[in-house]
Image 1 (cartoon, rainbow, N blue to C red):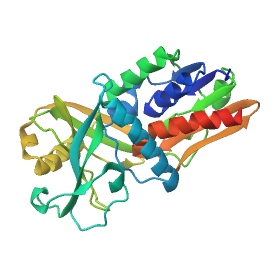
Image 2 (image 1 turned 30 degrees about the vertical axis):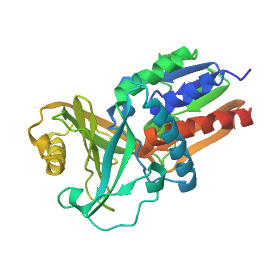
Image 3 (image 1 turned 135 degrees about the vertical axis):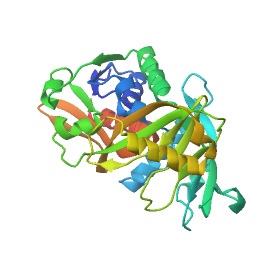
Length: 316
């Protein structure tokens, strides 16, 4: 029987890891300062998106594993995952993206490109209503016998007194919990508007673009993005940034110009030079670190979670 584990963090990485461990027969409790609906994950757009991150070979493997799981979940209305067609488009010519074969992406017909764009790829991808999806994961954890508790740990040593296996999925919190100065917050802001009838997603895929522009339809609303402010830990919505987001998205999809704004979301992406997925031992406690996914938490979640479960089995 595997040892009980405490997972610290209730974002998409923490919950997915906890589900994987619980469904593998381990006694699991999630302890988190922020409950799922208040995490950065809940503020995300979101979709499975081919983010570039390091280590590249592992990120490719984790992304593909997650894609397979999300494609299956997209067949269930209760998960918050839907399969939606859309495009990545670039304002300058560029090579075929390395991820294009993963999703059977096809080049856009030039006449179908948005104004100002010269190249693009069309494909179907999982688009996720994150608050609903996190609720689904929490329910799935409970069904597997796992628990969720709101609790803040001041140190990893404090957590180690709770269980012999600790799983660190704290995102930006890892900067202080394990004193990892390589973790940086990259602030992301989104605007949520009433859906004027949009059924396809759009992502500006221009290399080295100064601004983020993307839109994800979620039935009755559309999530518009975005911003990428490195080192900014402010969780308050910025009115000027919100207006700029709407302006950029309306330039791509004019029907959005008159859409009523129904909400604002702000989250802190946990950026690190490399995703940290590894085990260590501290004073008899087995610790697994699973953080530093940047904006790719959803995209890497199931691949990293399944590998985390494997790492713990080998280390015990």
